[in-house]
Image (cartoon, rainbow, N blue to C red):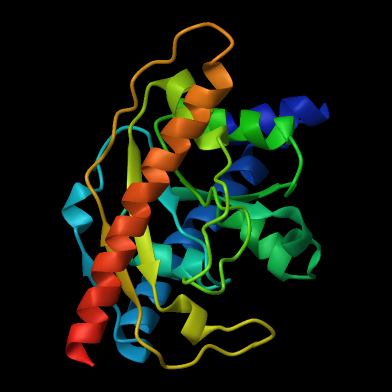
Length: 242
């Protein structure tokens, strides 16, 4: 963690005093862990959240959790299934919101430009994984508001990250957040949330050649198909209980 902050300071050409560096580190830790367990408690009590397959989350080592994207509540719902420090890629426009943007940076979220090749965000993600930390990412790129519509084509960045680091990919399905916080809503509703974690996937290495892009797309689509399968299982469970 100290290495992460030191690297950022070197890139900016500045160096914080040791006492201030340590103060920032502990501030981030307090904000992250208190926020994580607050969200867990909120989800359990307010949204009657249920989590399935949490045992599939690796307890050590780097991995990429790949999630579907339905609502701004997805990042909070993701907290229900983790007990480790997690870094989350979030669209850059949200970091421009006063106070919210500063808070997101402190709790290990970092910006990514949507719809463009963001080399800075990609390198930041690789740093996270090479330190042995966890990365959450939504390859759909934008919220999928209707499940009966065809899924968007997934971005392949997470596949390239997993290939570069050699870490597993964990499919995670989130169900119900689109009801909790629909578009243009500001306060979450007391609707049920379900999260299901699949078994880790170690993607096979890619060979050289002109078919590399197609191979990246196939692997991205394969992982997302596992996420969608988990979502369908959660949806069937919800329908069976309704």
